[in-house]
Length: 132
Image (cartoon, rainbow, N blue to C red; front, side):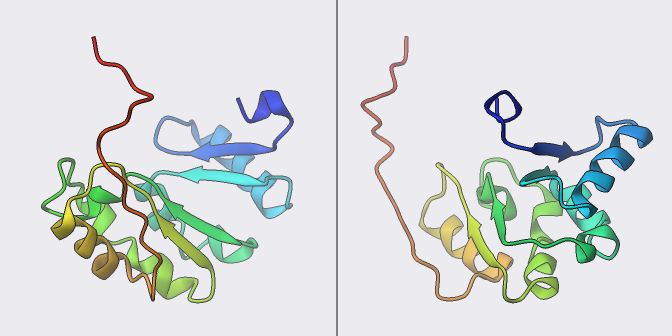
């Protein structure tokens, strides 16, 4: 949808071939991408290589509840995303989730290394959604 709206975006995850991955990396390094989606596994794998060569202005961690063993979708790779904070200490970082309870939210703040974050918590009651 982003590409269809003229926004230069791409993704890197295990579904790409080596050639496709190299094309996305080349676009990133040349500055031809505005938005790059990375799986946690790919972000950690590429941390010491090309990620250090590109201008990263925002790191957004989606499904952030996955960092916590208390989250409903625990994935061990998410627990190592604190390395992004270590490698990009001045880059703005946000963690997003729609399903974190209080314990899980605290885990997210601690494990990812967010500093003085603004917290926005809303109800699970979403009148704009209908279940049938």
